Length: 155
Image (cartoon, rainbow, N blue to C red; front, top):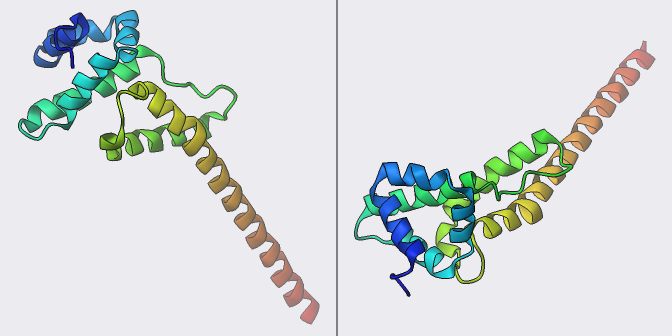
């Protein structure tokens, strides 16, 4: 892996200096450039997965999440209802953190991996769960009406 990359150097500085990290997070084009650079993604992923320095690993994971949020590349939901999108987005962040080690920096950017799960997994899961819940509620209401009808007819 090429650690001489200017983007890797920028990430190293940002990882070890909160002021530089804050500056980086304000540079949307630079964040997009990093997200599209395989050596930069590989280096950052390696930092986040290391076990020698857990503080460094946590800072790297936090930097990745903050970069994703600041890059404005996370899918915003299009025509999805806001409550469905919000629930799916929250679940996707949890999934992202729990499955982080499964990510492959060569195949896609962090954001692409995240967006794929959000669009093709979590949104559908939330919609299906809500449909099942609505059907369950409708069945409960219908059952209650049937029960009331039986009680009324007995008198």
